[in-house]
Image (cartoon, rainbow, N blue to C red):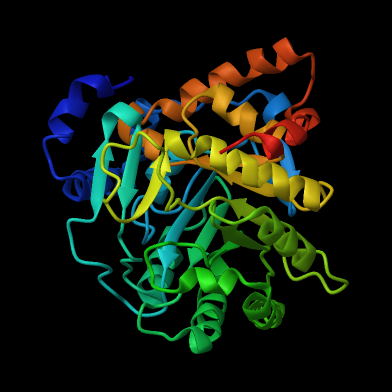
Length: 367
């Protein structure tokens, strides 16, 4: 039984954005322990096998996952899996609880299908998330955990925060997303510099080796990097002693379109205006790594065509979040229903055949 989200959206949009999100999360969290209701709302449907992929020893039924930020503390994972995502990413989780930046800190732009946020990693902390995951798992889909440092932790001590989370949450993660690219934690993006990043990743690899199960480490990067910075990150990932298993590209942007209606609103911009910039970074990464490192593409995904654009730019998987705000909880089903026909139109019998097909186009397209 599909719920007509278009009827509910105007009422939700009467609420302040963060309150509306909290309400949605509470409803989904309540459905966690109501499997029959979830099955009624989102009946299980097998995905077209042409969309399936195996990466990092994990099975992905199709390429569309949930980006970090929607469920920061893992409160609604079963319901989110029921919505049809092929994988979920929770977080960003910080070692110690923190409130994040003062509000208001989320701003909707419906006409542009975009959002600006300056949340600053509000998190219940690693211990609370670990306890919740111990009570919730296993899930029917792979789970990524996005981790970051606490605001008060100096950059020189940041490795301790990330290492603690690897140790604490390692038993629950199918992969880790190392978040060094949020624009809303002061100076965090400085960790993307290879001189700072190399020792950080070396420490995290060592911490991971001590785990019984060793989840892949993916680096989440900013869309505001210059081409030479992207190339340097790709080179770092491919050093003789590999430090990374892949990338997530990209986080939100500090850039604004020339016609943006509120150019002085601080924070990271997500949604449709980010698409071209994110696709360019994906393509540059793909070319710089010769397609050797899997990429999860994020930024401006709202349709099946958006998914294929990211795949053809060089991503193996994609994530979305902002589009859920505007399109509702049946968006993933609509996208995955439409993808097989697009594969047929392109004359391929498997999604993987399209990875990087138009990387040169996207790498040279102005953002």
